[in-house]
Figure (cartoon, rainbow, N blue to C red):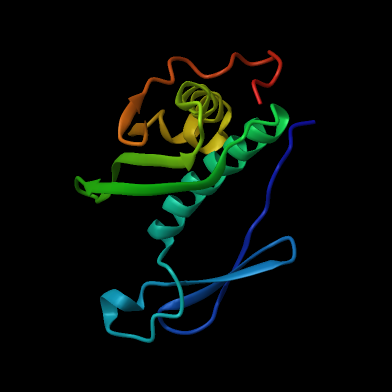
Length: 151
């Protein structure tokens, strides 16, 4: 049986909805564009959070699995909108961290990028550039289906 995930979205007001996943609730609000109350990020902004959050959780897992001395991880995610209808056409993630071994950090960034479900999904329809401290990371191919998890 394939794993599935569920989010429930409910109307709150004219620009806001409430998303619930398991026991967690967040507001989705596009009121900034409408001059409203700004009760939360817009849906597209959550796509950036999803990409960065999924990648970061894989990066932290790779660090933990290897007991690597990497701290103060930070991932800055940017999305570029274009086209009609408007859609995200490119994403960038710039990863920074404190690590005495930059090559180890780069290798773990690569492992996390290859294992991240959101990276693997979005790169089918948009460019995803990943850098570590400004230097590009090449992901190559994602892990093959059925192979052991690289994390």
